[in-house]
Amino acid sequence: MKLFKRASSDNEWIGISDIMSGVMMVFLFLAVLFMLANEKEKQNIESEKSRVEKLADSYLLTQNSIKEIVLTYRESQKSLNIDLHNEFDRDFKRWGAEITDDNRIRFQSPHILFQAGSSEVSSHFKNILKELFPRYIEIVTSPKYRDEINEIRVEGHTSYGWGRSKNEEYIYMKNMELSQRRAWAVLKYCYSLSATEDRKNWITSKFRANGMAYSQPIYREDGLIDRERSRRVELIVTTKATEKIYKIIEELD
Image 1 (cartoon, rainbow, N blue to C red):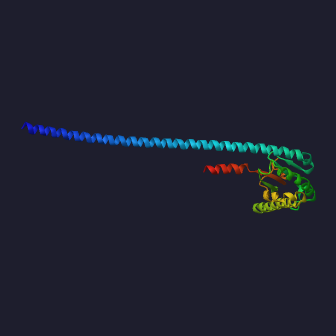
Image 2: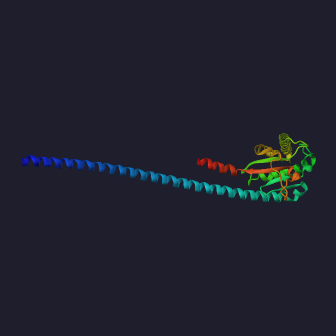
Image 3: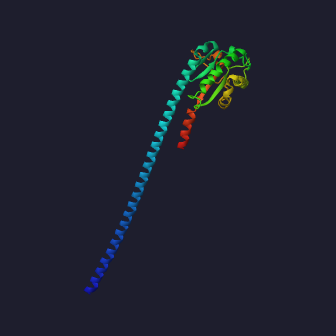
């Protein structure tokens, strides 16, 4: 009888041992899973940290690149402005022209440029262009600037209005047509000058004629539109700085 009871006690002990072993195996399994999960999370954190560091380095490099481009652009703009002033300051007054800080050569005496409503370049303006254009081309095609110039625009500008018409669409379209024809007429005349014959290919690749209608008026000091000065022709240089910045941004995508 005692032997039977002892055997029963041993069986109970064996059963409890098996249960405890099973529980320990479960805890061990969970601990292993936790360790694996923790290690994976640690790897993910390290990977994310590395990615963020690379992004930070990339953006820092981009910021420095853009800063360098902007500084180069400013220096180039300033240098070109000085060269244009040195070349043309003595002539601007008699030409009815000026140069702006962003290197626009602005002809703003409409009675010198064209007859009212006409796109035919006046003989006076032709003489001005004949004197100015070869010297202008000499500057912008110099080694300092030629490779950094994106395009040079000849822009025609008008003031608002068209006779007694009150039709907005008609007024806009007539002014757009006139400003475009004027810009084209100026470019055509400049292109025909024999003094720039050896630069024809460069001129073809860089020069554009744009009509702006009355979209960019010039204002007087009292805030009102200066109709007289708004009727004008401009030569505008654009560089490759913006193009370079966009290229850098595209490379980040």
